[in-house]
Image (cartoon, rainbow, N blue to C red; front, side, top):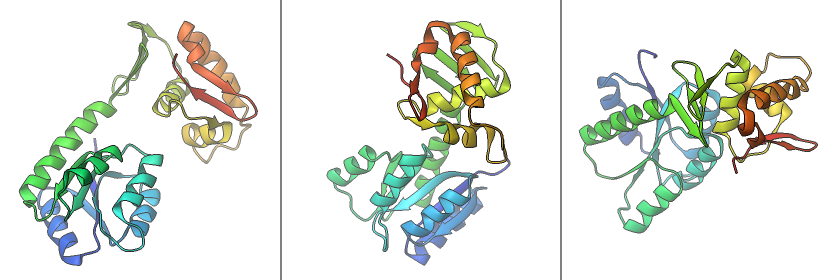
Length: 224
């Protein structure tokens, strides 16, 4: 685990960003800032080390709702929404959009940090273990069980299964899988995916059928 977790603070008010940022730094977090949704997304795509995003709702160029929607299309990173609006409808909109928490301005910085601590602790625990239709992936132990039985996977088979399940229901091209699992520095044939999928299906037994072929495109993980 890295020494400090990094938080992206997104708000169009300099004073608010400084208030939040100073308090987070005091509480041993690294902080990066953005003044609007477009700038936030640029940082989000470039900096893969961000652990949580604090996102204001009312901003120029791209508001918090639009920014949250795009973030959620790419990632499950924890997001805390900040807003001057405190109606139940706004809160529901935030949670339905995928926000992890919703805090109304003005707020206590101590309460904000306490909520961030709780979210990150829960997220860290959730991220270490994936469960889906009888398949359990333990990221810390680097082990996979199917209906309680341990199966032996190679390093790349483990990463491939993890990636497929984390993106379950989404049709993934071979190129996207290759770039995400083998990384962009791999220059081999994208068809190497087919070989690994075949082996992975065999090792998963009946659960191997959950890895569906998307003809002419790639694969998706879709449990019955």
